Picture 1: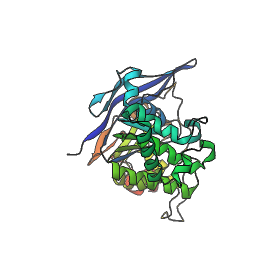
Picture 2: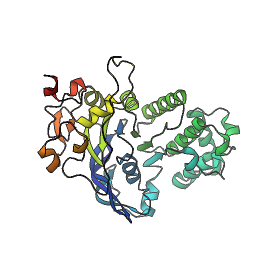
Picture 3: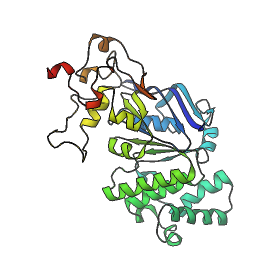
Picture 4: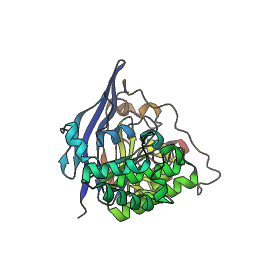
Amino acid sequence: MTEKVLEVEGLKTQFFTQDGVVQAVDGLSFTVEAGEMVGIVGESGCGKSTAALSIIRLLPTQGKIVDGEIRLNGRDIVPLNERQVRSLRGPEVAMIFQDALAALDPTMKVGRQIMEPLQTHLGLSAQVARERTLKLLEMVGIPSPEERMDAYPHEFSGGMRQRVMIAIALSCNPKVLVADEPTTALDVTIQRQILDLMLQLRRESGAGVILITHDVGVVAETCDRVVVMYAGRAIESGPTEAVFKAPQHPYTIGLLNSTLDLHRNKAQPLEAISGLPPDLIQLPTGCTFHPRCLWQTEQCQAEIPSLESVGAGHSAACWHADKVSGGKASLQREDSHG
């Protein structure tokens, strides 16, 4: 039986602002096994990045986890204080941030930034930490590591900075790696290289990986399982192939229909999801997707659906999952064709 390295159960994260309480993550639950890559996908503002920051306990000051558990290797880290959590970042859980240039210290040489967690968390001497840093730079594909470790972040290209971020994240052999939009702002070729590198390192290290992205194509290519988020909630989850081949929630279908696909029938145009994501301070009643959904009924407007099994390991939060034409990936009602 594969080891579960991360278990998120009923996670609720809120932001307390002058305008009101933002329900950024609302009851999110999922697990990650060792050596598994789980994708969390959805539109901007759906709560993906907040979920990632909650898991690594790096929320901004106005954000707070108000309920739920985050069990890292069986230990709930939500009640831990900052000192205790800091000791876990690196050896237990690490994060690859979206903007490497902003995440790296511009005043510190790259090699020093990789050596620091090695010395802090693993207690390595400067010499051993330097040798380990050279190996890490070589492992992530940085050419001439002896020279490059004495360079500053601004002297690297975007793709190379992202490789440095990966090296820092992997430096202490974490059990869980959280990658928040790791290929954003990179050209397509570099994106492919970074994703291939992450897949290779996952195989070699056995770490569980969470990939946060809005790109369902990337999830389809790289992830074993997927969690689809909307308005802070998981609305569908399961094995990636099952979810994308036979989606059971209208929002998932909408994401797939608005994604470019080389195998798409040329006669089948891209379909944008109508409307806009809801205000997280004033969420709609019932299913939060109902104002944008062609399948909505009075029940959808009044009652919040829970995630229910729709197949082997596949769950969806939709009152009409049995009627949604998931196999055809169409947002049209069945009766609209007749």
